Image (cartoon, rainbow, N blue to C red; front, side):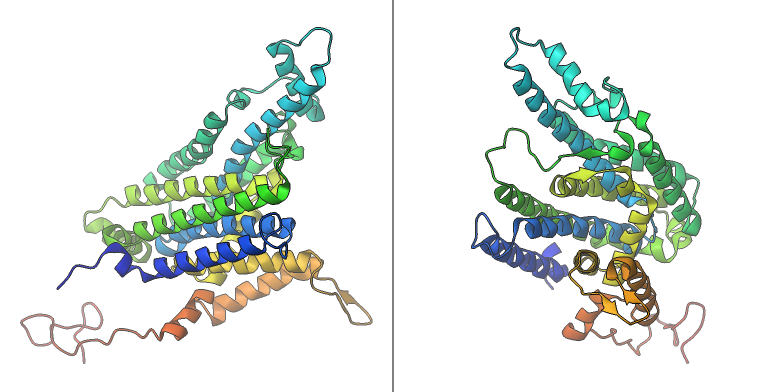
Length: 413
C-alpha cells in the first residue's frame, strides 16, 4: 500500500490553486492597463482587496473552524499590518514632496530640516510636528515590512500566552479577544496615539518613486501580489490542518480535555495557531490598505472582526475553501449593494435603500445559514462530489464479541 502524499490527501489544494490561477489570468487579460480594458482599474482594486479578505478569512477558519477558538480580534491584526506598511508609505511619499518643494530654496535644506518638515506635514492635522517613537523606523521599507510581521505576531503571542495559560475558553475567550480589539481601536482614535487619531493614514495608493507608473499598472501588480499571497497562505494552512497537527487541533476543538489527557500540550498548539494566523492576517492587511488608499481606527473596531466571523460562517467553517468563498461572496455582494449597484425599491409609503438595509440583509443571511445550512456555501460541494458518510463496519473491533460500540461505554445493539 503506497503512502499518500500531502497533495493527494488534500485534493482541494489543486482545485483551489487552479481556480485562482484561471481567475487571475482572466482578470489580467481583461484589466485596464495590460488587457483590453473591460475591467476598470477601480474594480481591479476591489478584486485585489477581496483576495486579501479571502486570505484573512482562511486564517480565521483555521482558528475557529479547525481549532474551535472564536476569535473576535483577527481584524485587529489585519489593521495593524496595514498601519505598519502605511507608516512607510506616508513617510516616504511626504519626504519626496517636501524635498521637491525645498529644492528651489537658496540654501539647500539639511536632512534634519527635511525630517522636521515631513513631521509637520504628517502630524500637523493633529496639532503636532514631532515624530512619535513608533515612527522610528518609518523611513526604512525593510524595517516596516518586518514590523508587519512582528507587531501582529508579538501582540498575538503575548495575548494568547496570557489567555491560554489561564485556560480561558469558549465565550469568555471570545469576549477577551473582542475587548483587546476594542481597547486597540479606542487607543488609535486618540490624537496622541502617534498614528493621527481619527484621521488615520491616507494617500497610501501613491507609491513613492512611482509617480510615472499609472494606477492601472499599480493595481494589477497588487492584484498579482494578493493572489500569490492567497495561494501561499492556503497551502500553508492546508499543511497546518492536515496530518498529525491537524488531528490534534481538531481534537482540541471537539474535546480539549481529552486531548490534554492524552499528553498533548494543548496550550502550545493553540498559541501556535493563534500566532501564525495573526501574522498572516497582518500580511493580508499590508497588501489590502495600499489598494484601499486609507486606513483609520474604524478598520480595527470589533465590528470588523464580527463581519469576518460572519463571512466564515456563511462560507462554511471547517473548510478552507468555504471560508475563502464566503469572504469573496459577502465582500463583493456588499460592494454591490452599498455602492449603488442594486436599485432602490419604492413601496409607496417607504423606499428600501440598500445602503441602509444591507446590514439587515447580511444579519438575516447569517441566521438563515446557521439554522438551515450550517455547512455554508462550502457544503454545496458535497452535493457535487457526492460525499456520503463512510459506512460503519459491522465487524467487531476487538477479540471479544460486541467489541464494536456505537457510543463509548455502550455495546452496539
